[in-house]
Image (cartoon, rainbow, N blue to C red; front, side, top):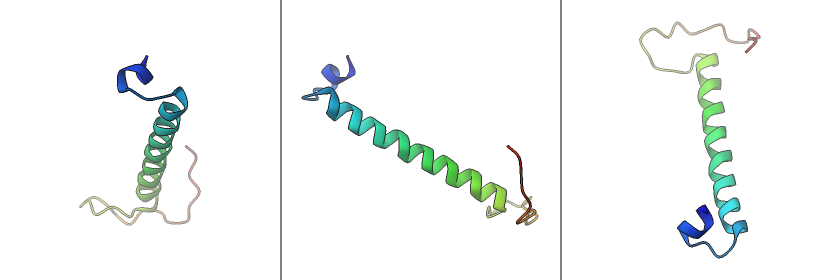
Length: 57
């Protein structure tokens, strides 16, 4: 249905596009989590974190 609404010529075009977007979004989310765990943020309450300490999520 999405393929037809967007006017893509095949389901492959739709899947390639949205798989890429999803992977890119996941990578961005993982980067933000990593920054938070490393204490790379610039928030006032950022106390430097416990760099190098294993964290279970």
